[in-house]
Image (spheres, rainbow, N blue to C red):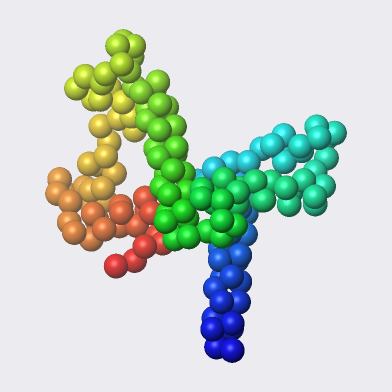
Length: 158
């Protein structure tokens, strides 16, 4: 009996993780997160200008199926980890593409020291002065930590 309960628990846990994984892109978009963005057009499978619950369920099922690489109907830790890593790699690739497009002013596919120094727009060269809140020409540990909190939205306290 205990084995049956454990097996049911495992299936419920994996099903919950699978559902969360499938819902992540939609939730990330709704919250303005950095996850993969699902477009309305992707959800509107029949192209009729509206999304039904069945279309959303089909989208979730497709996400689950694409994560279930061995096709056994369950998501292993390795499959979940691979999906998470691929999402990070996709985001990193998009960020690098944007950075190169913005900063590679001569279009040669590399960033020179001059191009890196010219980056930053209206903030260019003001990083030190923004951190040096008291204007004494030095950055204290408190000023350094305050800038870190500002960049992280004050969320990660140490």
